Length: 552
Image (spheres, rainbow, N blue to C red):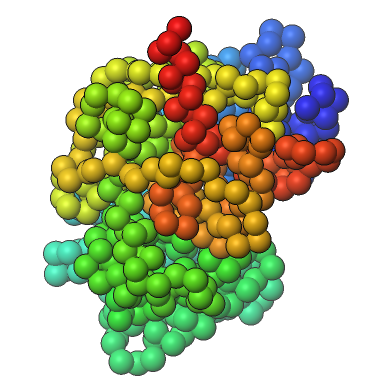
């Protein structure tokens, strides 16, 4: 991008407008904003930066919220609003301890200046974020003490700023606590509380057609009543309000993921289970597959699918090309796809295991990811010494662990999208050894041939986007082109931020490329012009690059 194009994006963000530009261009604009904030002569004030950060948040670019918010924190200190948004983004990316530190700093600022009404106005949201941190710790550990602490934090938030939308969080966590310990130590009684939340949500929905959250709240309150008064058709009500929520014009990816996460994590909504929360989870699955062209599964769902792969077929509404045999192959790749996090637990990207002989290395398994995910030399990459790799299958088996990088064998700087001739050696890859690998991992199968594009040639991407769960990008998966040098390939397969480093598979579920970026204006390999495409580095090119490095 030219400096003027970057400035146009910055100006749009400063107005609160979300520009329809490729993700790399947004990241470049965020970096420019961060540099400007750090400048001693910067004219950016806190109100503009608040607007920019909140615009990124609304569109789930939590990595960009973190980039700009952290720049403000480091250069200007603690702003009550920016710090709240930064803490929220950090939670979304998995950095629970880091988010707690940010909130503790906010609390010290508020105590030091109790007359500052900015802190007072944000106080309820700080309680809510502490509740969210406790809730996510419960999700990770299943420690009921964390669950009760989350209830207490959300109750403080609701007391400070009464709202049925805050109450529904308390309702969900109290119901989960009842299921966990067989008792509910709070007042008012759960059934009375659930009916009150439902009536408030229904009243709000009738009075305010622009509010999607009233509809999700009515759905969740009905879900609670189904648990408390089974057999009274409450599940039908929960489903009806869910459809009203999903079809609301202001219900976007952020809103969908917020409620769906609650259904998965707190209500234990498994789309394969014949429960009310399972019914809602199936509706969410089908909606996301249809509107966002992706499908996600958590560790426990993957474990169940490995035992009953035929159940997966019902999740692919209208998708005719997958058989039970295909699904078995999909599940077989999961133990070899890992999530890269930093030493604070913040998710950075994806990577995958292959046998060492793929790269003529005498080691059983190697881990492959992007250089812009793990590197000492690439801006914003996590250094090998701080990088850790987690695998969902270990979590499902009750053996959660993280694996450190023991040695980097090969790394190559990123290149620009589509620039084959200009940057033939820039492969955006890091190949390394892990200090340990999951039990039973055998490495992904790798194709000996690079596929060639046609109307029938498909490629699929499996990775860990910002939501953390393993995501399969399956639909609209046409292979668009392969460069004449067989170094880069372009494909339509949709991916989310955080998919960097994901394996790209052919129809036989063999790895053919390493995913590294995408753009709505990706340069074509042949001729002039651009098109919307994602780009992967072929395994053939990575092998060749490693061999050339070894020879020299």
